[in-house]
Amino acid sequence: MSPYKLSINYLGDQFLIIEGPTQIDPDLTDYLRQFGEHLQAHLQGLIFNINLTYSSLCLQYDEDKISYKFLRKKIIKHQNTFNFIKNNSLTLWNIPVCYHPDLATDLLDFCKHKNLPVEKLIELHTAPNYKIHFLGFLPGFPYLGGLNEQLHHPRKKQPRSIVPAGAVGIGGEQTGIYPHASPGGWQLIGQTPLTIFNPSHHPPALFKAGDYLRFSSITIDEYQTLKFKFADTNYKHKPSTIPA
Image (cartoon, rainbow, N blue to C red; front, side, top):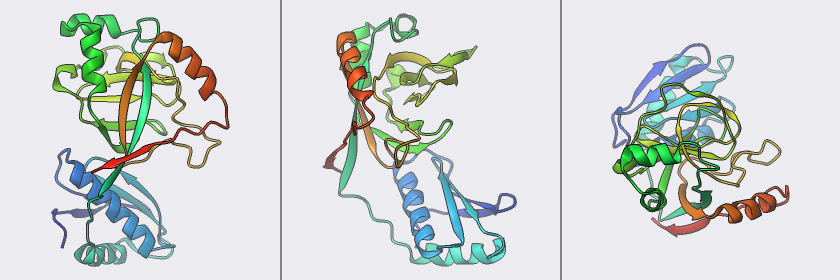
């Protein structure tokens, strides 16, 4: 039996949504991710895409092969027999970040507003192992849980038309990395030289939902050196494994 009360609702042609309690709960996100993978494995040919959020799971299905009503019945049946297993180990990605005003346009104003020295911001931002709840907004953009409350800060009132790829920002209660250049309204406090989304790679996103991420501080000289290293298309950034 499911540890969560889930609702299943129609979401338009070829889509339905499975929703849990509206909260940010790492176990709930893991449960939905595992359940989605379970459904894909057991309903092959019927479900061909899943999208995860903090508390819901959107399924895209082949309406020529199965109706919403019949698929809903199958999902309920699988929910009653599915066993959620907590992982004994976690995948952890180390992400080098340069916290320097030349690369982080909001860094000094952010610290001034928070009454924090830059060194303290770096200490707070690099301390947690951030859980990657899901990818969204942009392809490969990680929604991270675990930002220290002292660093919570509203998004910018006027978003930028272009934020550079690799920019590390804070928006509300979250921090994240822009995978490629795009408009954006998060407060930019750092920059990583690492490419986290490459369409020519398989998979194109460096990490996936359920992984963990940790930032490490580097100097601007180290940033330039690593930028050159990571530009090599044969370079493969590897994660480590840590106990759960």
